[in-house]
Image 1: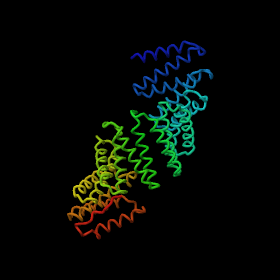
Image 2: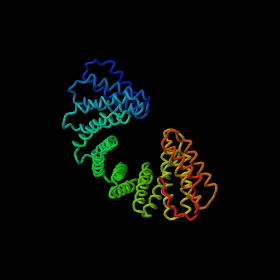
Image 3: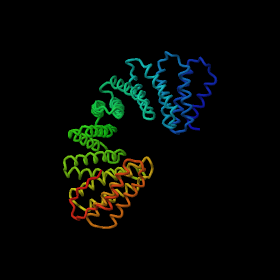
Image 4: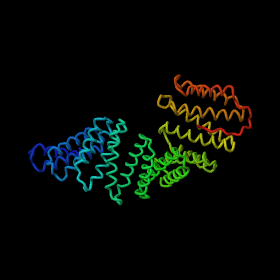
Amino acid sequence: MDDSDEMIRRGLATLDVISADDPNRVGLLNAIALLLYLKYDKTKVMDDLQQAIQMTEEVLHVAPEVHPNKLNWLNNLGNLLRNKYSITDEMADLDDAIRVAGQAADKAPQGHADRAMWLNNFGALLNSRYLKTSIGADHEEALRVSREAVAITPEDDPERGARLNNLRVHMKQGYSRTRQMSDLEEAIRVGYDCVRATPADHPDRGHRLECLGALLYEKYCVIGAAVDLEEAVRMAQQSIDTTPIDHPGRGSRLHLLGALLAKSYWRTGALADLDNAIRATQEAVSKISGPGDPLIRAAWLNTLAMCLGNRYSKIGAISDLENAIRTLREAVAETPETPETRSFLLSYLNNLCILLLDKYSRVRQSSDLGEAITSIRKAISLTPEDHTSHIATLKNNTRTKKEIPVCPNSSHTTRLF
């Protein structure tokens, strides 16, 4: 038995002998609850967390309504319940955490030093439930309390950046719901505020720059203004510049930069953008070590193959085409054949078929043609008979067999989609 276990044992023994109305009972209960949570934080044993929750509930039950620490204890209970939900993923636990966090936010008077923190926590929990249930009222309430949390947080508060980041998340989700450009523009404005509120050496600065770059790119996709794409590239580059080489988030930031530079190449035709896109995406793929997430790796491999394929189309170097084919074979091999991944696998197979046809038209190796036919037939086998893309896939298959380009010196203008 370690020191914490002994202190918990003695605390519980004392509870058994003091009266229910002893003024020291509340403090003792809270001390035991804290020890139990610290023990859980070390051991991750659910029973310790559950006992900490029960003790904190009893603290709130016996404490006078006017006790100066009652709001803090209410917030502690909300945090404990949130920890429980993170383990169980049970909706009942999330509902309990939201109920308690809402009480803390509602009871905190205007001007209370911790009101912004409690509002922020409440909004984050509401957002968790919205993501699970898609109930619009939860999103609207999360947005409301997050706005208030930001509004009452001083400009020089070190937590302002985190609260602005949460508000950006809620606003982006609002845009995903409404598709109103005003929501996206507000999310971008808050994203800039968030970056400005984040110190240059803050560990989350790279992530916040990455998110802002993604928002700007989304705006570019809707409006098509070159300035938004250029600014997205600038934010993505800054996110990488602030991210250490060994940071686990560096890969996703490199992939974003690579994808954005590839889009820039499509717009301008500048080969430097495409070369930089390839370098960034190659490094991104190299950052996935071990098993990782095969779906993410496959997606990044597909991006790399698209970039290599487009450089082949630009300059005609057969090595780029061969590397693109090899890379897409990896993407196909690493993508499981499930209903959830079918659309990705179909895209990779289609891209692989196009590249193989390009190579066949260049070097006239029958094995490339055979692999192209195999790839498109596999795509057909994965496509439901009643799916609208089935006819298009069949047409591609027909072209594969009957409309092969015969000129070995083609202009290499194939683009991948």
